[in-house]
Length: 124
Image 1 (cartoon, rainbow, N blue to C red):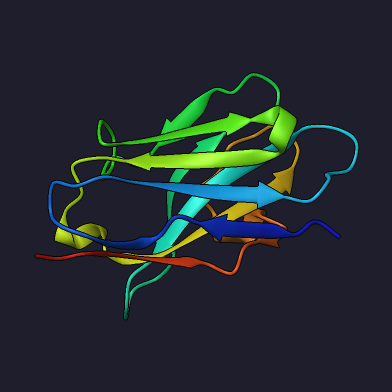
Image 2 (cartoon, helix red, strand yellow):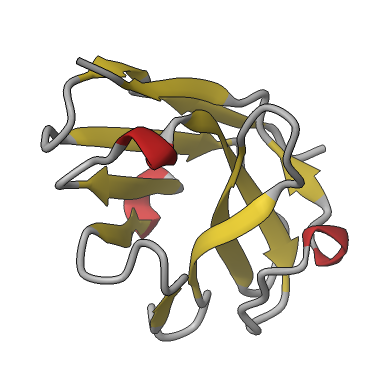
């Protein structure tokens, strides 16, 4: 069973930066796509960024493009989300996710494995 553990959340002022990490237990054979999602109070979970398993091609939601960057360290089975120029509307619980295969998706239903979530609060 794949387990995902996020870390790096916290309280930051507007304009600040945070880096989230998501460490995974050993995956099975084949490629795994990794994603970051977030869920604000009273809102649905939404996709933020995704990185493909085979070639590290990345996708970012329009709301974070140019501010957030997803990356991965395959040797450590870890994916990162570097968040810069944070805004109050970025406040949410951030979840990492993984799915077998090589296609990026921002659909919650397409991911098999989820972390427990880490709180990010952007406030002065």
